[in-house]
Length: 440
Ligand SMILES: Cc1ncc(COP(=O)(O)O)c(C=O)c1O
Image 1 (cartoon, rainbow, N blue to C red):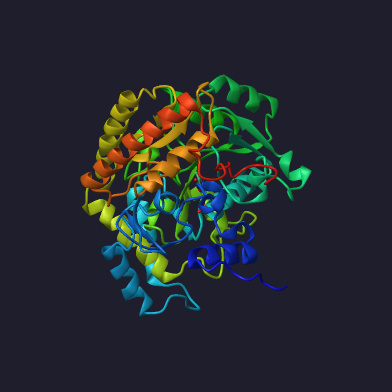
Image 2 (image 1 turned 120 degrees about the horizontal axis):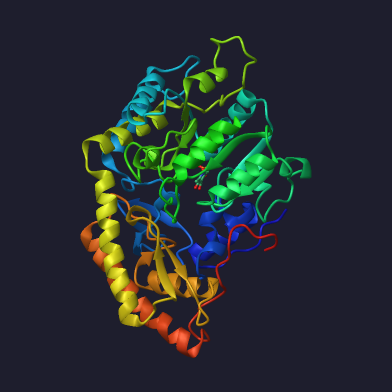
């Protein structure tokens, strides 16, 4: 295949090459061109704290850094120095390294339900491990998945439930049923309809919607009575809702839970944790049939585990979670005031906990709008803020937050104008689109 001649602007040239060589132009859909306005910086060259720089040297404040993985900040020295020290000792040996145990002890000490843990690289792998283990432990095939939570894994069992399910066999899709969050009657009905068939119920403990009183407690009791396992996917809530996990925050103990993202400040470490009686099936000290549980060539590279240890220790010794809440609260106050000032109530809304703010954009008819999302993101980028969400990190200072509020107040004036006069002439390019869609 011959590659096309490139545009003279190096950034645009790289964008063209990226799409020629990489399906989607990048390796994570959520970072793709179709997720951002046309005038976004196509590439980020470097970051420090919550600031990033594009190929032209322009600086931006970033939100949601690394899909919420970079909780402490880009190039965060306490984590980097732990990684450097480990790199110089070697990263992957023929036998396990002591840091595998050290890191497991650390997670075990923080997460009450983590009687045993197994590390891997990505959240999806950890969740897949939980699914296989639950199926093996219960001897059942079906899974109940929370339909209000958008993502659990890159594997067939989950991708088959999405709009973008090409390539997933029908037989796999038939094994999954969905339930609604905060709907205990709906879950009851499902457990009854598929009595004795559901291996596990998988969900995030919460997302933008908080659990109603006693919902999670009732859910846990119903699942236990049905003989299924409760899996909490704490990829987002872990180390963010609470240092000890959302399971501690809500007082509900899952059978298995998964962590990733915030665990290693962007380095590739994730974990499956849970009850010993279940987890040990992945080991060698039992007489039941063995489960092939999370074993890969790069699974426990020492520098990634060093990053995880350094990150978790930093959380323990600094007010990280408190700061995430405090910065988010400051941002929420300022943005809510700016929404009122611009008369955007009902059109722009902040959702979720202060430590994990996302936003909804609605058009003049109050309908969810990707076009208005594009306009808002475009106007923020012009003002130096990349904000697909308002998920803060420990590195977002009060002045970064205040700069963001100023940018949003100005972006809202453009938004208001577009609601009144239409988007014509305001949108500089095509709309952003949801990741999960059947066709481009
Ligand atoms: C709740 C949740 N679970 C699982 C995953 C999968 O994690 P990873 O992308 O590390 O495979 C994600 C990723 O966004 C997620 O948000």
